[in-house]
Image (cartoon, rainbow over all chains, first blue to last red; front, side):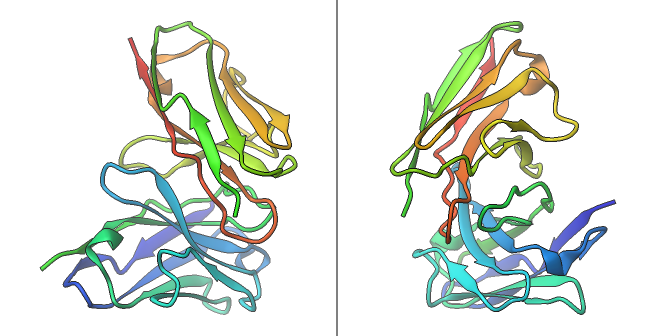
Length: 118
Length: 108
């Protein structure tokens, strides 16, 4: 059974940092590009970041570029999102998914909630 | 970057109705267009990939069509459990892998 389990969310002050993790199981993790997607309260889905299967290529949305860094450890079947200089507008439910260029996104986690507030 | 425009942004229909949602891309995405169903508090679910291929396990009342810049998601006979928000998303070429703005479907 395929599972993606996000963790690391929580309450953080503006300007603070968080590191999200996504533990994968049940599929050949290293064969898939992966993405982080978020949904802010009352808003739609927003693609945030993506990484190639071997980790060599990374991409970030303009809204997070320079503040967020996506990475992966294929030996641990885990995807990460390092979030720095957090802003109130980063408050959202963050999902990991097997989304990449020309991909499908048929595997999603249940999400981890990030709240940026003083 | 590719921009995806969905319409309508919301709709209300009765059980058994045929529902159509459109997604227009600002430039061609070939057939690299996915459709997702998202219910509040749950993970998004892939319905259609490659514009018209039904994901395994998804009811056959869902169908997708289109290529290039114009795409359609159709629910042939709306069911109560179809109440959700629907998103198109492209995966053509390098990211950003944009989502459409979403269409909220309500049951009358």
